[in-house]
Length: 371
Ligand code: PMP
Image (tube, rainbow, N blue to C red):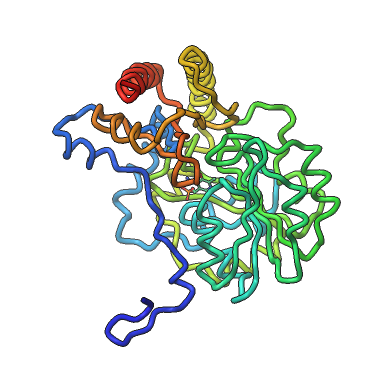
């Protein structure tokens, strides 16, 4: 299995299944011969990128022959202002995916383990297994992280605990009280990773960012954020990590040089200043959430209340069938089976028009499957 023509791949790779991305829009349009497909599968910003970011990247096009700034100086300085944290505490990567992979490359030796929730974001498991480590997946309770069981799962081989807050695919958060209790008990030699990819969408006042713990002096906390969601820059691939300076310096040892391209750096720097775009994106998301909640309830479907830009919905039938039928109508959603839940879907909250088309199509599809 791990051998090709007598060339042997690392054993750790046998346990890795390649990431299955949401189906690309262009592919669906090509296959169906249509031009108006919509993607509600990958939690992108339906309003598009920040216009300020687009303007800034356009200005940089003439400099594509020059390597990017390997230290990401301007973006780092912008984040220093934005987060009120030291420059040496920031790592900027090629998407937060790259930071997740680096965490495994920096800390996991074969036989080590990391603890994570299930269902949750798949890349934690990838990062650990890639390095020959073991993932301890702790089932969510009511689709929320079960922090008490995650704590109990820590053993002498544990290096880190991944906390996806808010969680993908369920949209749930862990509260300040729960994190306070967790942080009071977790040993200092366990790295606590708060993945806050959807942080900007949260409105529940019980939420707390891991940054607060870093600022209080916890040296075993790292926070991951991204420009792929509310800032609308998924195609640029840029995200960041914040932690103690020493921890960040270890991550930087394992990083690739020039990993964050120039367009990503200037786009992200401009997007951080575009408060109007962030505000508008959040408002559109809140209105879309309310609309979708009402419609799901009217359809008799249960959903998990979300603090993100997507909703986890129980559709009471085979999600693959619903996915295929929606796809034929030009709407791409995410199926729950990839997270181990066959009767669930995850749908990204769209523009009002997209949400309406999604609901009308889903109603039709569900009726047809019942017949
Ligand atoms: N964390 C979570 C929870 C995510 O949902 C995603 C993207 N789907 C990422 C990290 C990775 O984001 P990116 O690499 O685009 O920054």
